[in-house]
Length: 492
Ligand SMILES: Nc1ncnc2c1ncn2[C@@H]1O[C@H](COP(=O)(O)OP(=O)(O)OP(=O)(O)O)[C@@H](O)[C@H]1O
Ligand SMILES: [Mg+2]
Image 1 (cartoon, rainbow, N blue to C red):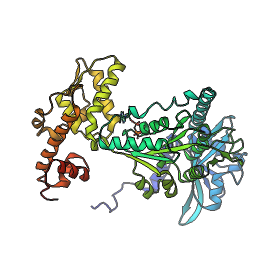
Image 2: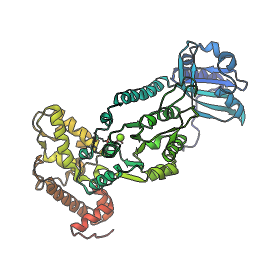
Image 3: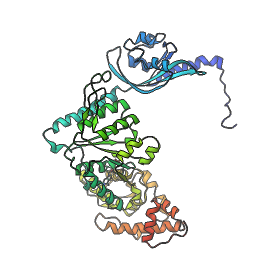
Image 4: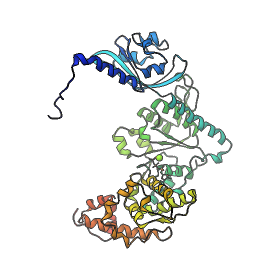
């Protein structure tokens, strides 16, 4: 039987359909989302337990009755179910704030779909998720920023307490990191928006904070918001503020942009921001004005925007996640932080930096890592980048009795990566004399790198692409290194 042929079924549609339907209802009753189904005339035919909990009603008080009979606060225009019955068009992720029968104010996010049979509209179904707690969190975020803001009034010197890092905290001697630091230092002095991208854990936030602190806005507020954390409507309120009456339950509240006035607004995961909000952001960037949700008044803001994402900006644009127009605006200064595996030269310095950091935090006196561990750290791919290295060292130091980090202290998934280079490990023994924290790292690393390149080059029989793949570095970087080593590619 091929994959497309129908599976044999023991189902007797006539006898089993009632039982099937009952099971189906049981399943729908056990999920956390509220589900309400209405027929063509707006009478509820199904209403699950979660929906009943949200509205503080019993299913029997709703089923068999028209929506407007049960929910008098709704009308034909505000009921999404009735709207979908009217237009036949789905409505997705619409936020709704209402007061239930217990008098609680509830915020839900709803998706409403038309139900059709043979192209004929026979009803509508609505799926609602309770986001009351998320909304409370959204308000709390703004409130906390306001409290901080109030404390800061008259004491501009504590304005940068949320941006802790400076360029000194960015460890690395690889050409790309030095180059990025130079570029970022120049960016700090300008007013243009900045876009930082790089894989997770590469140090994006570090760069963003350092840019803020090094610039003329360093004494002003630094406010960070992750754009993936909230649904569209809430994020809009958080960023741009709300006005009483803007939607039911809204109150007069400034948004983070207003609170970041004269400082920096850091928008993390910008490619998760819904497109319509990106358009509003673009307006703030170009006109330096914003309008709170539900307000008619425009407010002038003086905020520098720095955005970050893990995707390549061009990829985010082509996937439709980042608007073209916003991309051009943000991309004025663009910093792409390479993954750690493409700047292995930084690894020894980072090892030393994190051992020093945890030595003083944990009151320990760890001296370094064993040859074996250094070799693994140097050749491992680090999908979690610097953060993963930091955690590996922290984890190892928690398990340590002596003063050296040994293989047994590493997490299993890193230990397993040993096998890739195991067969060549003896080659390195002459080079790495145990990594002590003092000494000339640069020289050691250069020799190690050269040796790795020679080994991989020989293994790949002189094929550049294969050598680059084995080493996990870009072809271009490899070609540059080969030239430095005076090695000629055999075939490419
Ligand atoms: N060059 C570096 N020098 C010192 N520490 C670094 C460096 N890069 C990253 N780190 C450390 O690694 C951790 C992760 O850095 P950061 O939060 O800036 O990464 P990120 O790129 O913003 O990651 P994500 O995409 O997951 O948010 C932090 O603890 C940071 O201090
Ligand atoms: Mg980050």
